[in-house]
Image (tube, rainbow, N blue to C red; front, side, top):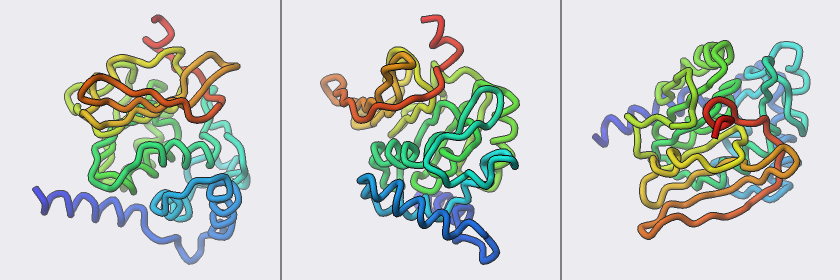
Length: 232
């Protein structure tokens, strides 16, 4: 088991890799991390390092690449967005990943957040409800051997792969989906935006032996969670 884990982490590290010498955005990423992320209080050294190395511009449409490192969300088509770099880093840090975790992501989007998670955790399972986005993201993530992709409604999670050490949701339901809480290990963390469009908050749910603990962390603005979440 230890040997398999080492191979998985080695594959993830290879995909995360160092920036290519011909990458014109190395400086832009360094400024992004220094000013937008570390400058706002994100302290996890592993998160900061990964955000410096992953080529965010490869996860946005060609017409948005010059804006990939700006301090804002960007459209990726089909009424979906890639989150602001600071929000990606903040929510990732809130998961408290150490490298051995199995993580579930709801809302693959462009694949950027899944790539960040893949460099910080043992395995990542990610679900996208918008099929064209899911297929493009799966191709982008193909080099990450520890990422498993699926197209479908993520409201009920990925039961056959549960339990998870951490769950991250990148679209906002108006309530915390109970199936995602149920798929956490004891000690596991669920981080997600919750609430109506004008009053969303990033919430962290920690599963404890006696129930759950909830913390409200940051006001945000995400696209709403669709599918079953809308019908509840």
